[in-house]
Length: 289
Image 1 (cartoon, helix red, strand yellow):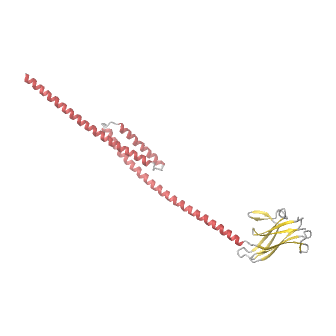
Image 2 (cartoon, helix red, strand yellow; image 1 turned 180 degrees about the vertical axis):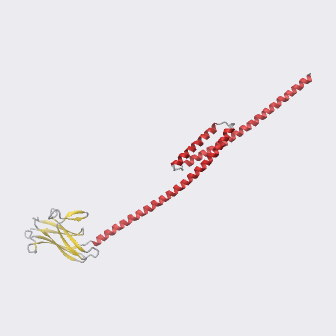
Image 3 (cartoon, one colour; image 1 turned 30 degrees about the vertical axis):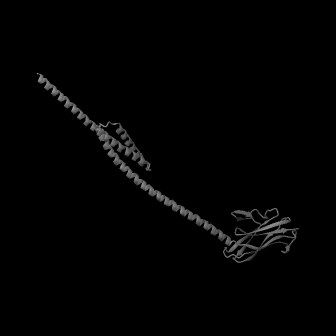
């Protein structure tokens, strides 16, 4: 009986030891599995984090509004999946496996977006380069046109000056009724302005109007009528006398007259002479008693 009891105790002890050893082994294997699951989850989280960072980086390169909207939606999806992955237990192998498959899909979508972004950016850069080239050429053309206009204006001014005639040897006399020179204002009936119109081969030949403006001592102009005006420096100004001549480009003598029909005060006078809208000479003279 004693031997049987001892045998039972030994068998029970062996069973307990075997059970303990088995439990320890099972626990170790479970720990190994849990560590493996945790490592896999950590690696998966790292991959999701990298994808999220890439989405952040490429987002700043998108200039197309429609593509940017789609891109932002996908970026939010990645963020949500990453948050879910962080919350799920490492032992939830089924969900982690699903999230891994989701990651592969996300990677494919991102590669597609990156390709579109790079393509659009390349096209945009080409368009910018073309636009810059167009602007550069436009500025060059504008600069050239401005320069040509300035040169044309300068040339026109040179031609205008070159073609401008000149009045020399200007003489102003008072004439009496017999058309003789007099120094007595009471006998004077005309003011005669005589001059030599210079030779000029560059000016246009043909009929030309010669105008005079006679300034009295008070600086007012002798005028017969308010309608007696001509163009000078883009405005109408009054003239005292005018005469039409036939100009052939050669030097010629010209005389033009003012009929005295009013009282002319004693003092200093000035005569300005104009042809083709330009003042070609002036002469001061005096009227005495």
